[in-house]
Length: 232
Image 1 (cartoon, one colour):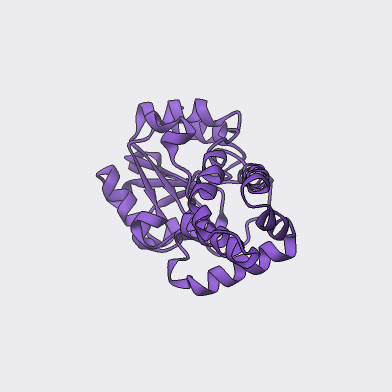
Image 2 (cartoon, rainbow, N blue to C red):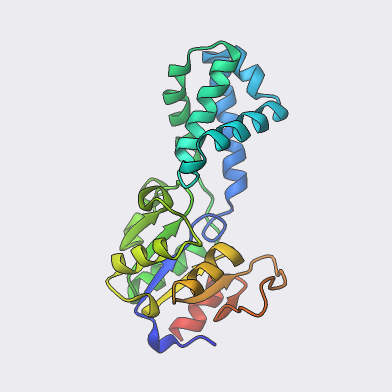
């Protein structure tokens, strides 16, 4: 059961907690393909095939397995490999990635996200904690965050307790004084529990909890309910 009296800081996941990530990624990939049709038509045709995209990504993930925490690197190198396979200039990977990355930040926030951020940031230091590569400042919500910790910067991702420890230090408190909030039962909840934090599972889809006997301290259907539980 959640003990609000212990909470001195909040760590908060981003993708699928503050916004749905896959519509954003799919749109960014389409804009990238449109750009490639102008700049590297052979690559656009090659990567326009879903099977080719999967094969390229799998090869890059195997080659760069030691960098699995860096999604920007994996995306950039996937584009570069696609360019090579199609016979185009691999140097186009840099501007192509920037086209994708710009679109990756054009997220559509859940309707509860901004009010919750405003309310939580007025009470606690809030630290973004993400395995993804979104930048809260490029998204336009950076003013609500005390800090932003990413797997790319730390060198490991959730559920590794080290990244949670870094986030707690950024907030200036011990892990035991942190409530970690996120949508992923394994990465966010089990990871937070393993780091000694209290955890809140944002279960928008109403899934059954999959990791008994471990339990989150709080289950909420959205961030409005989270704020009601913490700030009442």
